[in-house]
Image (cartoon, rainbow, N blue to C red):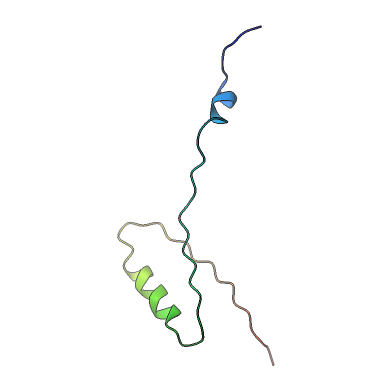
Length: 59
C-alpha cells in the first residue's frame, strides 16, 4: 500500500477561509439606504454584492 497523498487528500487539510459579511439592519428612517449608497459609491477596488431581504405588510 502506498503512502502518497493525492490532491483530494491535501485539500481536506487546508484551513477554511470565510468571506467577510456586513449585515445592515435598523428601523425605518435610521439611515440604512444612505449608508449603503455611501459604501457602494466608495468601493476602492472592493468586490461588493448586495442582497436585499425586504418584507412588510402589503395592503
